[in-house]
Image 1 (cartoon, helix red, strand yellow):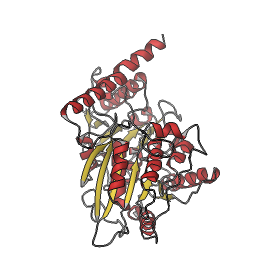
Image 2 (cartoon, rainbow, N blue to C red):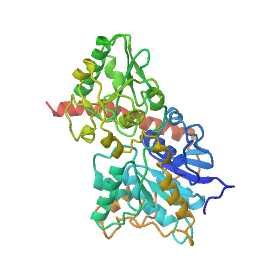
Image 3 (cartoon, rainbow, N blue to C red):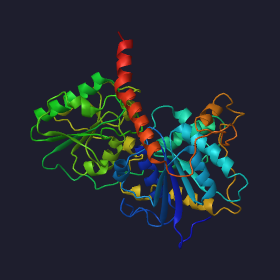
Image 4 (spheres, rainbow, N blue to C red):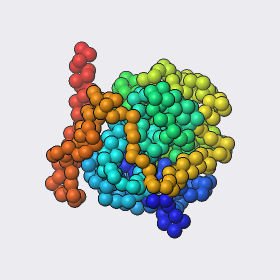
Length: 448
């Protein structure tokens, strides 16, 4: 199934949230075999690419707005269950399959795909990876992704860590391929705008407490009052009613309603790259937006106000030169990033980003051209190596220990009817209400 110059590369992307769809779609555009993507952009990224999008049905299935925000248009897009996706992969022909899922989802699909492609002489190249900084569950997440033909590492540091984990358990590490984050683009920073714009990029799950979030909001509003000549923006991930990769129990939109921000403070949504176009100072706890900002040489701060802790993820930025507090920012401090640290994190502001995906493209092209096709997928976890762990992961996706579909698994041969759509929306609404309203109340009661 090697791609030719006359036929576009067919890539299928399975994603389970807005962030992972962004990563998967943009990664697909950059890894399609062909010439160097020196001129790649969100407008022309699909030259020579036929992109099929599959959205895994669940609480975080992206909305139309979230999909449009990515800026990469799929040639086809549909919502599926795990079983429906596996059926599509058995019936349809693709060159590459990108699994943009949580680790357990990747592992389940690897076993399911191994089963549906059983006996084939040819199959697609399977690619997976991470949507951003990997600062927790390194071994767990990596071993759940083992078995893909390419496990993408977003930086030199990640590539070294990934190989060390695989080699340390005796697993084949040849799949680890160094790339970069697929959304590091945009014009480099050229100096302060008028007005000077400070952007706080929030995260859905960090920090998670109402107290900490209210503190951050108050400090952001205080900064706006101290600097009335600046525009201070609270960059939000999702609008009310939308889900993201992580559960958000205390939405900033609701918390800010109880406060009294000045006129130069406002909420913004939309594509992070477009917001960065007018940013003079990017502030965050540990968001991947910090890497986007550093890539464009925008002054970037990772906050220390709540401590430097693994639970916040800001420990990843130790040594970056970007750690600072709101007190320092209020006084006019601007951090200077450490160039060695930045280079190890896949932030290639030196112009080499255009070639960051060359190795992945060459590897995929070589695999597609391999005589006799590719061997079966071989995940590290099997019923023999992880008999107490793997079956549960597979069962959550209605698969048996051998990757086959379990009897009675939910599936559909047609789009859901009006009644089913209403029931699904109601179920998601109930889940959202439970996460954002009921769960915090129960937690507070437990603390009494």
